[in-house]
Length: 254
Image (cartoon, rainbow, N blue to C red; front, top):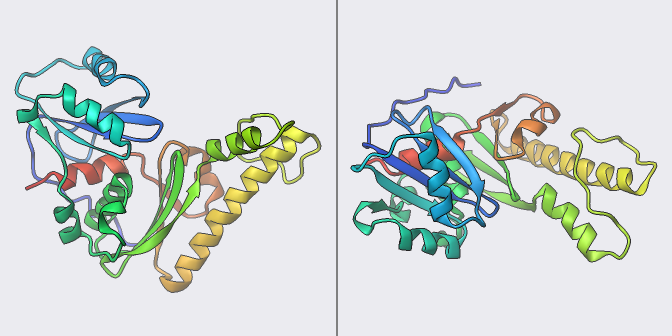
């Protein structure tokens, strides 16, 4: 495995990073692009309430600017209406394409979170193939190799899968997932938990095996809200909780 270079990014001043996900929104600040002070709040909350939570944890600075990105158009528009336009920055897709070669169709459809994680892998491991698994509301499995984004897979997230069984049937209960779950379930709830757990365990390991057949040196980077629970289930994986934020920070560098 190639050691992470952890290149020191250029300083970009006092900036608050706002990453809007389907379920959770991250607010973060960093002085070096390596270490982040952050909070996570429900995306359903109004941005003004999220900012209040943020300001309770840190002093307000008049000169700070804001970087905004995400995957929920309605929430992003609400943030734009709240934040001062003169101090608001949004990442340029052309910059991403310059830094991470790709053939995604259409190019603008590649999600913000996937872009950030790919950028972080490219800047930290430029000579290393990386399988990036982001375990959030949806699960993405992307391959960065030969200096470019090769493509990836998108799966429904774990909570989404439980809700689909609950909403699509008359009698199945809504469940949470223990990690790991038993191989065999001897109640309806345990059978659902076993089915969903092993569905994802097999899907993740299958993707890793397939990608490593093409790129045997590929390392596995885990990030996203459910990543810490799953690291033990994926041998030789690395949990990188700030991968998205690190890529977002790098994207905003001049």
